[in-house]
Length: 143
Image 1 (cartoon, rainbow, N blue to C red):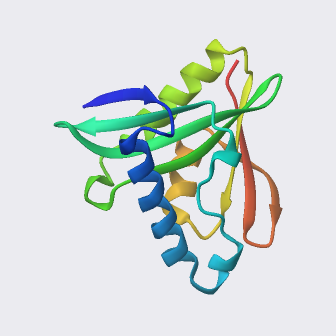
Image 2: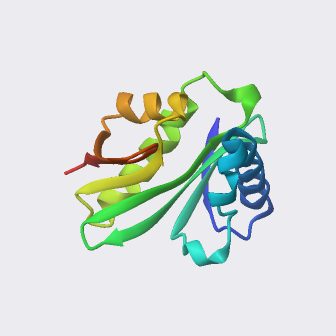
């Protein structure tokens, strides 16, 4: 297993973002009209792609939200690699990077109905700080 930092223009990152978008649109069903596919407007600062035996298995992205807060974006693991603890490895990469950048907390938003993702975030120390219907925001202090 190898985790590689890269930019969104890399073909591995672009492929994973597209798979992530397709997965989310399928999962959301009728609510998919509120989902926005990846675009450069997200201003992602860094992306990590996880490779297993040279094959891209998952990704995660980061952007600065404020002076002391980083934002976790686009955590995705291909279906055949899920349940192996890989999300935690990607979250560790983001947390280490955010800490190096001077952040003291990480932020993310998701839907409460994405139960596997929410469980991963809880197990990694994130807590819900805001909820509106199915939408939640979670934070983790990392100082």
